[in-house]
Amino acid sequence: MSYPTYRRFFVLLTLVVMLTACGGNGGNEEKTESPSKSAPSTATATVEPTPTPNPTNTPEPTATPVEESSTEAMPGEAAGTVEGETPTASTEQTISVFEALGVNSYRSRISVEASGEAFEMDADTSPMASGNMEIIGEYVADPLAMHVSMTVGGETFAEYIVIGDQAWSRIPLFDANWMTATLDEVPDFTEIVSPVDLELLEKELSNIENVGTETIEGIETTHYRFDKNTLLAALDDPQAKEELQTIDTIEGDFWLAEGGIPIKWRMAFSGTGFNSDNPDAEGSMVVSYALSDFDAEFTIEPPEEASLADTLGIDLEIPASARKEFQFQQSVAYTLPDMTVQDAVNFFRAQLSAQGFEANDASSYQDETSALLQFESETQMVTLSVETAENGEGVSVFIAVEGK
Image 1 (cartoon, rainbow, N blue to C red):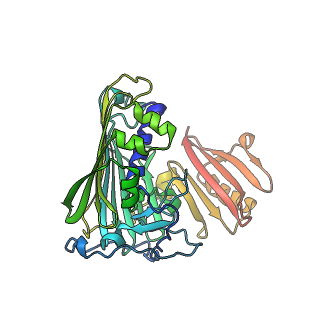
Image 2 (image 1 turned 30 degrees about the horizontal axis):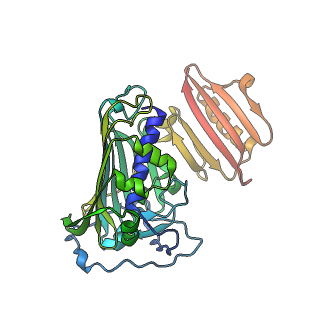
Image 3 (image 1 turned 135 degrees about the vertical axis):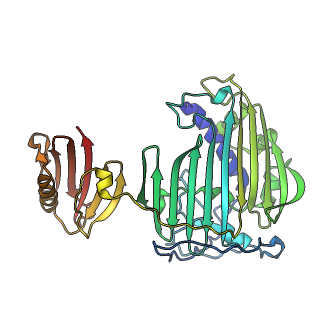
């Protein structure tokens, strides 16, 4: 799929987010304070099944002010983000599905299914060769945890786990091993469950159809339906309008629970105009979202990370005070808070020498604040980079190993 075709796809997905978050909090409502992330890293997030909540007894969501310094988020809440900012699991939150529906856990499913000539592409050059993508999320409020898995073409593309204030990720396309992550690195796919402002929705989408009430997963919802003309009338962005005009037909439905929480939505696009490299090629795309399994039992545990020896292919000792920054394929990075550049160079040089590696002085460099050294054995080459940490406390170390 070419870049312009990807761009069109994300324009369509942006339209979905715009529609389901119509009005949102407008940046004016007060945020809801997230519960404290007190779950330990060894916790198992398990929720006993309970009857599905009756929405008629669900209190109206209320907004509680949060201190300005609080930027922590809880997985499963809808993010309030700055325009142009990619939502992550650590951005400020509006009211959550947990609060609005009175549940302690739920599952979400986002699906993108594409077919037709417009989406035909070379599997060797695009991870979306099948045109299909699915994002499954499991969210627990207490103890705080989430597990999100993204599949593209039936293959796992990325996976994330959050327990309390700790996070892990893996991207099998590059490395199947789990590695420690930060909350900022975990994408927040709950952005599209922001409560909808119903009055603003019906005002901006004046010809939207109110189909009636339906019960989904035990939740009473109001079903709305719209088409291409509805969306065009609501859009202010000229580029988005232009992209939308090229697609022949658009049909959409969404179901809102009390308080404006989207329980389910579906958008279907068909015709030509999907692929800018082949604008006359026909195709169809269905983008859907659904919440389910309220108060189900989910077991979310810390994943087992690959050992350093398995990652690098050599056995190195790391100081107990070291903080791991990342571990990816045959490379790792640490912060060593109690070492100088020379200390770190001596520490790793001794270990590599003991394992039969010789320093390649011609390809190495060192001064008081940094060092870039290479070591070689008969079968492997090690690159060691050391520099003074940005905060001036200790050093940052990067180690990479490759075969010869």
